[in-house]
Amino acid sequence: QVQVEESGGGLVQPGGSLRLSCAASGSGFKFFAMGWYRQAPGKQRELVARIPTSGRTNYADSVKGRFTISRDSAKNTVYLQMNSLKPEDTAVYYCNTDPAVPTMWGQGTQVTVSS
Image 1 (cartoon, rainbow, N blue to C red):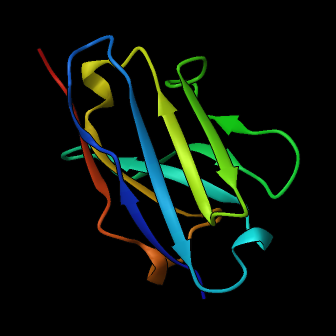
Image 2 (cartoon, rainbow, N blue to C red):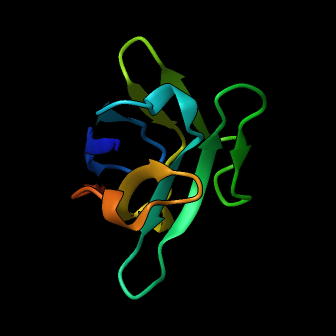
């Protein structure tokens, strides 16, 4: 089973950038589609970016054109490059497979966009 650890969050001003990393351990990483999810206070967790084992990536409309998901199978790592950040991007960001495995949620990494 794959386990994950997210990192790279922080406080950034509107218009700024961050790069999140998700380090996966355990066997089988390269066989799964992976996703970045986020949960803002008082809201449900949502999938914002998805990368299959091969083929096209997918993004939520709210982040399309600003976020880029990528993966390095040699390093068992998934990345989320976030540009032109907005206050509404403030949330805890998680990675998981897509569809998500309930037992695989990590601690997440907090992203706060504020001036």
